[in-house]
Every structure is written in structure tokens, then in C-alpha cells.
Length: 303
Length: 303
Image (cartoon, rainbow over the protein chains, first blue to last red):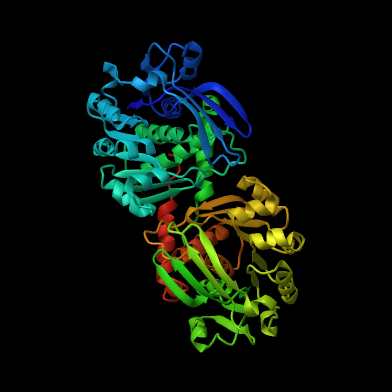
């Protein structure tokens, strides 16, 4: 099993009420890959500029992350700058320099084409489909998107969704995509577009999953100190798909544990800037927090 | 076991995107009592005006709800009028006529003084304490409050909280009462004020409980049609405390099931105006939805 991930590898400049991090490693594919690599080998497809060097690449060292698909182009790396409000629930984008990411045209190294699982990060739905065309016979395709594509390229997105098994979006995106306020109705409408499984990420309010087997609700882990939410959604995706791929099955029980594994990884991600916490995370810490998630949610049937 | 509840018995006029209900039965004590009565006898303390007659009282008929403490005074019954926005998450109070509730001075019938459990609905913390003074030796005291008392009578509320075992509030109230944005920090601060157990109600995002045994998170039941959220919080309280009282124990497992039972009752409450759904609810329906709550949240440990 191996996961192909396509998405951004970027520099982030982040301001939170607790501090500021300047040009640190970010991007959807970075967070996803590191989280997923705890469980399954990852094939990364992305693009960086000449300003992205050995020091930045070192973050991926010693992990089963293949970087043959990380193209290095003339120009500068994608840079995002944002500021979080004091409650960490809303953020303002101060600056988006797409740079080499603007003309990103994902091309898969030959060795990637047999990837068993695919994660289409939040890029143009047309590019997402172009990636799918290059994969031979994936067993599972998961996909992220955002309001920019939902309103900007609705027809292209609809076409991509026909080829997607699992869609991961936040609640606002689910509402916009479906035109339904109620999440149960939104889920039914979206699942009719293609994805048999819909995972709605609600930030501090947890996750709702809708699948053929019904619905599953997971809380976010109640943390005393949330430091920087950047990348939590992609980290969730990495934990979710990484765990799924490692199990080689998609039954309901496995999907549920995958949601909790995604939530577990995301709960670590927000404890520090950038990928700092993920990079010093250990498998025993992951398993312990998974266990705490079970303690957080478990109750006995009525006797 | 029996539960003493003190709170409002009122007429509500409610507008939602789905319709309008004029002068229907409402009030915190009404919702609480009907929900709790599925599990435990309830002793109700409240006040109504001369306009509250046999027809209104019929709602409580055939249930173990003692109305000896429902005072009938000259004047009109408390009337609340509100309008919900299209998303049902925010509401506007159009009118509050306290009427006979304005000079409410709760007096317990002799037979109520031995109540084993007490629910202090959202009234002046001074009156909440006056009720407690009239109960002999309650085994458990639960309490609700609101921003009006948190900011308006902080010292009186603090004094009341010293005598409370379980505080039930929403997330905004928990933050205001504690002065902490983070809910984990808020919970620690509030539990230091007296209540060993704090239940934070987050509406469509579920419930968080903090106790000596740690934390417990429960989702709200994902409903396709939410009709009217009025009374959901008090209905949660009734299901929670009613179940607890019926079990005669307060261990962690029982508290967790009580949270789910509260959430179960609340999920029915919002399906119709006023107490309409609760009044035609059956115990088998309750047990079935409790079972669905377990299905909604359950996952297996890592193998």
C-alpha cells in the first residue's frame, strides 16, 4: 500500500495571539504527508522554488516519504501569510503569493502510478482529475476542496467528484457545495454527486462522517493550549487516509477508527507552529491519545 | 428518589423559518419536568397567572409530576416571544413579559422538602439559594444560569455555586463565568467555584462534561429536520437529572449515560413546537434513540 498525495508545499508566515512564525514549512501536502507517513509510505507530488533547499527538505528525512514527485522550478515557493483572531476560530489571509504554484501541472513519476490510495489536496479540480488520469487503478480516492473552487469551477468540481470515494471538507464548504444548510441533507446531496463517504471537519467541534453504513460523530480532543490551527485539516486527512491504507480495508469499523486517527494527529498538529509537533511525535504518543479519545467518548449501553 | 425543579412555567410565542406558534406551553420547569418524568417523579415549583387553566395543566396529566408547588397568582403568566434566524442557531427575543414571574418567591410544599435531587432552573441566584434552604438533605443539586445573572449578580451566583454539584450552562456562559476562552481552562476555573461536575451545552455541536473522572464529549444527534430549538437545554437537563436520579448513583459511567439521555430527550424536543413531541414520546422511542447515539459514537480500540 502507498498513498499518492498532491497538494501544496509552501512557506507559511503565521501570527497567532501566542507568537509569530516567519516563513516556516507549510502547505497541504507537507502536513498530509508527515501525518500519513506514520502509517503508510507516501508519494508526494508538488512544486517548490529554488528558495526551497536541503534544510526545508530535512523535515521529510527519515520518513517513508518519496520526494521524486516534488518538482523544483525556477522562481519562488508558494508563500501564505495569515493572522488568527484571539479565539483561533477565525483567520485573515494577509498575503498569498502563489509563485511557482500558480502554474503547477502535476506530473507523476512512473513509480507513483501504482499508488493504491490517492489524496487530492485542495487544488484546481481540473488538475485533480489530471492526477487521477495518471494513476493506474487506485483502490481509494480521497479529495479536499474549498469555496474558491466550489463557486469558481462548479462544473469541473462536479466532474472530479464523480471519481472520488471520500470527500473531506469543512461544514461551510459542505453547505455551499450542496446548497443545504442542514448537514444531514447536505450529506445526502453530496454523496449523490459521487463520494460514497463524506467527512465534514468542524474544527474545535469535531468531525461528522456520513457513509453507506450511516453516520459517525467524533469530538475534537479538548486541549488546554491550542497554539496554531494551521494545517490541522490536512493533518487530519493524513492520519485518516494513512491509517485506512495501512489496514487495507474500508469497512465501517475501519473508517471510524480512521476518523479518530485523523483527529488524533490533528490534535497534535495544533500544539505548535508549522509541523514542529508532528516532527517530534512518536507512535506511542499517537496510540496513547487514540486511547484517550476512546475514554473521552465511550459510554455503556442502557442496562 | 424524586426531583425538585424550580423554574418558569410560561407561554411562548415562537417564530421559526417553518412556522409560528402562539402562546404555547413553555418555560424551563415545564420542559425539564416532562423530560425528567420519564425516569423519576418530579416535584414542580413555579408560578402561573389566572390565565393558566386546566387545558394548559393537562400537559402534565398522567405523568409523575406533582403540581402542589405550582402557585396560581393574580395576574398573567410569564410570556416570552422570540424569533429564530433561518439557521436556527441564533434567536432574537421580541418580548419578555415577566408578569407574575417578576415577584416569584418560591415556597416549597412540606412534601417537597425531602426531595433527593434538586434542579435549580435559570432564576435569580438568590432565589435559587432560598429554594436550597428549604430542602432537607438533597443528594445532588444541579443548577442552570445565564449571562443576565453572571454579569448582573456575580457575588450571589458565586455563593449559590458553592452549594451546587452539577452546573449546566452553554459554552458562552461558561466562558463569561470563568473569564477563560479555552473550555478546558474554563472548566477548571468553574469547578473550583464549587460544582464538581460541569456540563457545557453546545447546541448542535453537542455536550462536553468535566468531572473528577476527566472529560466526556457527546455529539448532538444529527437530525434532518430541526423544527424549534426552544426548550432543548432544559429538556437536556430533565433527561440528564431524571436518569441520574433513577439510577441512585453518580459514578462516572452513570454520569456519561445521563449526558446521552439528556441529549436523547433534547433531540426529540426540537422536532416540534413547544412540548408537542415530548408529550407524545414513548419510552421505547427513547431507548431506541439512546441505542442510535451509541452507534453514532462507538469505535473499537486499535488492535
